[in-house]
Image (tube, rainbow, N blue to C red; front, side, top):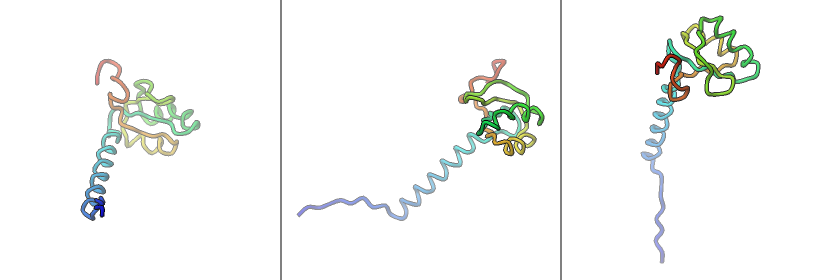
Length: 110
């Protein structure tokens, strides 16, 4: 006669896994959410978005800081509220331009 040990997920264990997943998702979203004002990484999601990226960003008050780490992406100084509607309509993803992702900002500021 053999005794088998079976690992079971109890309701409490499943609930803890769900809660941990939600917390990690929220923390990740907060890390990448663009700031209200500051450095924002603009990533075009389509070829059409890539061609309209710079002109649309500049038309809505963004100031170019440099190229981003992803092909076709750029880092700008801008106000999220002014830029977000146009970038969303154009198919451009807005992400916080953290120095870890984009390198140091021109002029030595981090």
